[in-house]
Amino acid sequence: MQLTGSQIIIECLKEQGVDTVFGYPGGAILNVYDELYKHSDEITHILTSHEQGASHAADGYARATGKVGVCFATSGPGATNLVTGIATAYMDSVPLVAITCNVGVPLLGKDSFQEIDITGVTLPITKHNYIVKDVSKLADIIRSAFRIAKTGRPGPVLIDIPKDVTAQKADYIAKQPEAVKREKAGITPEAVDTAVKMISKAKRPFVFVGGGAVISGASDELKKFVEKVDAPVTDSLMGKGAFDGTDKRYTGMLGMHGTKTSNFGVMECDLLIVVGARFSDRVTGDTKKFAHKAKVLQFDIDPAEINKNIKADACVIGDVKEILKAVNANLGQQEHEDWMNKIMAMKEEYPLKYNDEILTGPYVIEKIYDITKGDAVISTEVGQHQMWAAQYYKYSKPRTLLTSGGLGTMGYGLGASIGAKMGLKDKTVINIAGDGCFRMNMNELATATRYNIPIIEVVINNSVLGMVRQWQTLFYGERYSFTVLDDQVDYVKLAEAMGAKAYKVTKKEEFEPALREAIELNIPCLIDCHIEKDDKVFPMVSPGASLLDTFDEV
Image 1 (cartoon, helix red, strand yellow):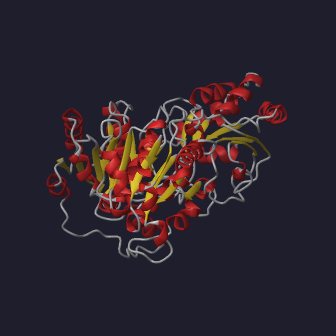
Image 2: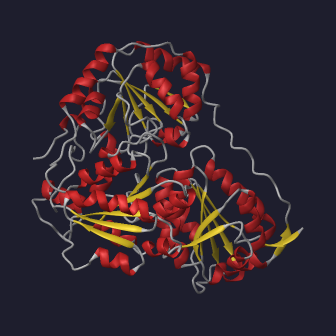
Image 3: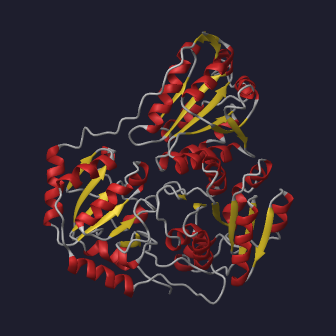
C-alpha cells in the first residue's frame, strides 16, 4: 500500500498505540497536521500555548502513564522551543518521541526560512535522533524511535522530517510493535551471589531508592526486598513513591533538603544498597565523605552510572525489577533490630517541622495530602515549593510525583499536569508552583481552559524567587540581586482572564475550602496562596558540605 510520509507518520503512531499528541502546527509540518485532522477520532491532539508546553505535557503524560509521550513542532523556532522539554526528559530518563518537520531536502543547509539543524542541536540531550531524507525509511525509523525511547534506560528520541518527505509516497506495511524485553544479561549468578553475601554480612544496611525503581515498576519487589533485608529506606526526588512513603521504614528524602534521619543514617550505615539512583550532587554533598563508613552495592540498568560519582564496591547491572526478583529469590531473612530501633529513635528526634501558626508552604502541602488522602497525582515546578512537596506529601505509589529533578526546569509543572490529566482522566491532578515558576509558562492555563482539562494550579506565592533568595540570605550576605518580584501582577485576575476559576488565599483557614471546591467543580482552577517571603526550606546541607553538616533554621 502506497502512502504519503504524513500518512505513514499517523499510521505508525496508531501502531504504537498513541492516543494523545501535544503540539503546535506551522508551515513545515502542515502536511502532517492535515493528515492528523482526518484521524481526530483516533488520536487526540492538544494544542498547547507554546511548544515548550507541548514537550512538558508529553513528558508528564509519559511519567504518569508509563507510556511514550509524543509531541509535534514545526521547523526553526518551533523545534528549538521543544529543547528545554527534551533536555528535561533526558535528564530524568523519560520516554518521549518528538517529531519535528524541517524545510525540504533541497533547502537544507542553505539558511532557508525557519531552518534549524535540530538534530545537531539536540544530539547531546536525546537518547538518539534522526533526520529522515528518504520516505521509504520513515516507518522503520519511527518504530525504531519508539523502541529506543522505552527500552533499557528510557529517554527522548527526536525525528526530524523535511517537508517534501512528508508529501512523497512509499510502500507501507503495518507491523505490530516489538515487545519490550527487560534487560537481564548483567544479572549473573555471580553478581547476585556477591550482592547476597554483602547484604548477609551487613549489620547496618540502608536502602536508597531512585527513579529507576519507579521506571521499572519495581514497587512490589522493592517492598519484599526491604523487608527481607530488614533495613530503613530513603529516596531521591525521582524515586518518590517507589517505596511507600507511609511505611514505618521510610525515613524521608536524602540529600541537600533531606531529613536528618536519612542523612545521618546513611552516614552511619555499613552497607548502602542503591536501587536505581545515580548519586546526584544534590544527594551526596561532599562525595569524599558520603557514606564514608559503608560499602556501596549498586543496582542499575545503566553501566555508565556505576563508579561515575561514587565508587561502588559491587553492582548488578540490569532492569531493577529483575535484579530485585533475583536477589529476593536467593536472600534469606535478615534481622537488624538494634539498627532499626536506632533509626526509629532518630525519626522521633528529628521530625520535619514548620511554623503552624500562619499560612506556609508546608501547611499547604500537608492540607493537599489530607484532602486528597494521598491519592492525587502531584506535579511541581522547581524551587522551595518543590522541596516542600517532596518533604510533606506522602507518596505511597509510583508515578504520583512528576517533577524536573535533573535539569531543574522552572515552568515544567503546568504543562506536565495537563499531560498527566490527559493520560489519567480519573485522577485528581494538582500542580504545585511558585509564583516565579508560574510566570514561566502560565500561558498553558489557557490550554487547560480551552479543552476544559480540570487541573488545579496551586501557586505558593511569596513575591520572590524563593530558593534563590534563600541562598542569597544564607550564602550571599542578604544581597537580593533581582530576586524580588515586587510588581502588580494579580494571578487571580490573570487566571480568570484565561477562563479558569481562581481563589486568593491569605490565611490558613481559607485554603481547605478553596481546594475542596476546586476538586468538586472539576474544571481548571488556580489557588493563589500568599506566604511570607522569607520562609525557607529546612533541613539543608550547604553546597559541597557533608551530609553530617545538615542544619535546621538559623
